[in-house]
Image 1 (spheres, rainbow, N blue to C red):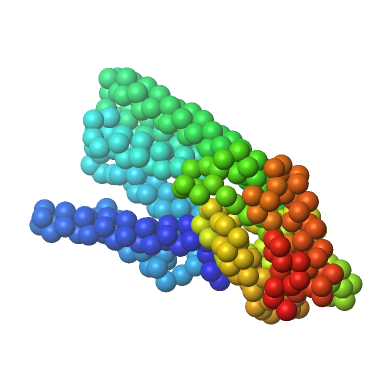
Image 2: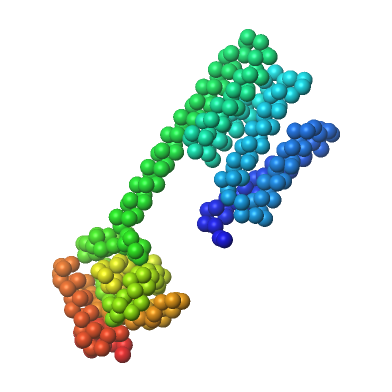
Length: 340
């Protein structure tokens, strides 16, 4: 079972992190000339975590919770060890804050709050042995944990809202089935192109549009079912996006029709790019999907004065290709099929 790239990168990063912690711990033991139970437990936890991340596919959430449990238990043992340590002035408050912050980073807010409250309760219980002067330290640690929790909750909500907004923007611009641009998004690019292009177009402001329609697609739905038809549309859209140049746009225009915007091309360049798109559909081979062909109509920006006229011209040339036998391209001043 393969994981998303982000999860796989996180596993590799986790292995490096815990391996580095293990090395630092061992170096500290060697430098001091002696070890204790805490050092041994830390070494075992780091080694086990590295092994789990490297050689298994244990869910990352389980690893996170296991580490928090192990280090939380270790902190509890350190708090109540014999002889006791002055908890309010040692490194234990920093360890408590680090674990609390880590909990808010990897757990849901409710779980993290319970975990941090438990750690703080243990810390407060162990700190009473330091005498009455411990209260300011308890208040400082408690307020810091509360601040970390509040900041974590705010950042989490803000990140979720930004992710949702980005998702909604993406859905507004792309076709839900194929992932290609949708019609309104390409309309916006076409208007900018007709107004003079945009960044990266260079000195050449001309452009071409290619209207591509799959041949006999309704027979695919009738014979194989709509699920296969949808999968075929997804495959065709992916193949077209892979074939076009950087800066070109491909949109699902209507049903089984796609429209490509090709900036910075003349008639010769439009012919070459249209041929590549035609060939991309013809060469498409995916298991479980029927082979299809496409008819294409090409129009140049120099052929029309308005966007509506340009699209109408591409549509007329598309029907010329279909009327001439399909599976071909119809170009400006080339009413007969170019690729029989």
